[in-house]
Image (cartoon, rainbow, N blue to C red):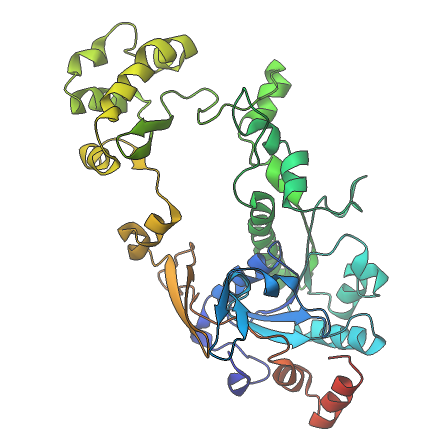
Length: 416
């Protein structure tokens, strides 16, 4: 949306998506927070990204960068996580900035922040203060350790959550040090839970007029991703350790080398095992009394001595493409693809998961699309991220009805 399309009370056109008309104040940085509000923007919400005039989101400096002919740059990393938002600069360390935020909150439905707990309270704009301004407000707070508990004030990054949530200790190989998950899973999982919590709280606010605090911790989010680890410990006293590419108990279900790379194969059920034996012209193995049931194949010794060698032999002389073609729609077998291969994958294309956006002065940017597919009100990920404060005047005029003179005063004073 641009300043020209802002129209006051309902800045989101009715055809923008299921969240059209929902106003979100995004006071977040980097990923845990911006990704949350990006999803809401894709789904049609009017998201106003609030940045400090002299200290905007430092993800604007993250690589890679689009480059214009004049040498100026724009972070593609920032663009991906802040698409579809309006840019507003506001210094919350000033009384006028705090007052403006309170005014904006009166017109908003949701506020998302990812400061360390207590930061917004120190600014005089904590959840209790802002919900007093607007009892309907959904206040979503994403942090490393949550708003309560002995760790609440600790600084945290994604790796902090992977370390303290147990995931890091489980990942890697048994004979090597633990390995972090190869993406910012603490940030990303917290974001997804924040979206779910925000939508649930928004539904409640629409029904009752009562807003609430949505408190999402990266540590909590990572812990919830550890599958059977917690119950394995609480029931059997087993402390999960790194297993490499193997599953804790399901077999065969791991990575296997082939002629030109690796594939995942997960044909562990009796049905899939029977089909696999037929696929490789060894149907008699489906009835072999040592490996004829799923329970037998789950046994680590049986799997190691009988099942895995068969698969290694079958896969070794075939390429990833040959194995995928052989498995077809019958057996779960997938090539391990690079990101370059994924970007050009026909299934990814069919699902519209790589979208092209044209950035004025910088050219095209290809980035990931929106995984949530709605057939009546589809998401709209092909939108631009704002420059710092790009829509400040439009937001303050359209949402707060401030005069050009007042806006000029605020800019001169460094508030916006």
